[in-house]
Length: 407
Image (cartoon, rainbow, N blue to C red; front, side, top):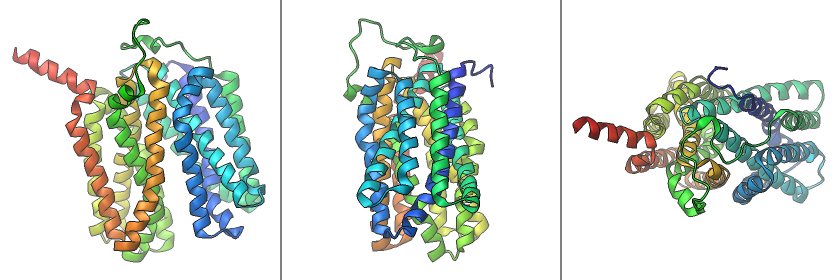
């Protein structure tokens, strides 16, 4: 693996994002419980979550300009430090307004971290390894998410809930120091590792509209995943307990199966995507994931539902790094920061729209209707990706090969 990824800067980004995932995991596992203990209503907690998503939405586009102005490294260090400050002061804030402001800052800094890391990874990876590298990025963050809640449980038992947020702050600050001290300066607009496809110096810069059209399938994929992820975290446990007789203790284990599926298969699918085509594999995984969502309507055994969750994690969660890799292949290196900004706008929009639409459907028509609409969303992505299959350079190469063979 070291031979395949010789650039130590990529490994530094993995280390930084693992530490961030660990800090996220500690804080996220306790945020809702802490706010509830402070006397905030469920509506207040939902509004505060919306403030976080709003910070992502509003700061996604400006992040591309900030990275071009100050560099990806400077933006990453500043965003990590900002997140550390936000999570550190969170448990000591007096009321709703101040907490809402800090949650907004949390979202703004988070999107700065994501866009910066993605820009660095795409710029330093060659075109044949992009999904492999982005899948390891997803795995590094997911490991932090898995370990973080376990650490939070121990910290609360030994100290207190505010102390857990302070530990999260310290971990995020260490991540910022690691990047500041060890990450090299950004490479120039020239492609990393001899990558082909960079524009000539005299070629006019691509417009945001042209970049968006080029990455439209990746944007649809990340919108669908953000929408799905934000919705099922809130409402799948409620559906399983109300309609399938699953106990609270069993429900708590459901996210673990999703995470295991993601951790085991994401890198495998990344390797396949680099060889066979990212968009082709995204269509296949989207179709399988759609069937797994429908499975919750018809499956009644807990073991079968756990298997469906594991497969959903392996397929739908793997689409995210594949879509990022596809974006890196179809976009010129100097446009990575703007493309990543647009990409994260769609992810945040999915996170913002998913919970209110899903909750309205759940209340009006029940959990089955909510699951059906998530399945329709992913089926729509599969159809969209089929219509625009030519967006993937691998599909165009395959078509040329068939024509040449026929000739």
